[in-house]
Structure formats: structure tokens, C-alpha cells
Image 1 (cartoon, one colour):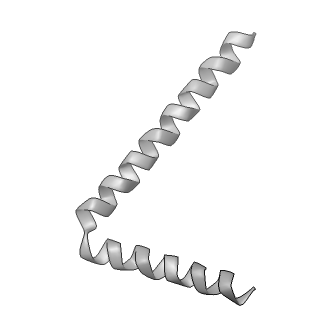
Image 2 (cartoon, rainbow, N blue to C red; image 1 turned 90 degrees about the vertical axis):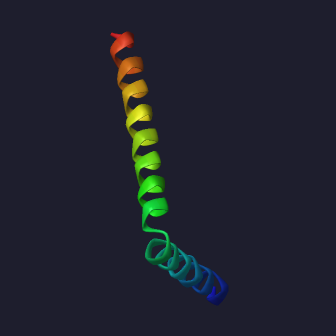
Length: 52
């Protein structure tokens, strides 16, 4: 299990490095992810509404 712990810490360090060195890119990535989640939620709402 130590490998999983090290990989998790490496991923966290990479994200922190990316945010500090490329703040606009990080913000764009978060915005893209949020837009994708909003689109998925909208599609799910449309699907559930059409069932009834």
C-alpha cells in the first residue's frame, strides 16, 4: 500500500505545482470540468423529466 500513498502525494504535488505555475491554465481546467458537470446534470434532469 505504500505505493498508493506515494502516488497520491505525487499527484497532489503535481496539482499544486501546476496551480502555482499556471494559474490561468488551472482555472481554465476547473471551469471546463465545472461546465462538463453542469452539462451532465442538465442532461440527467432532462432525461428524468421526460420519464414522467
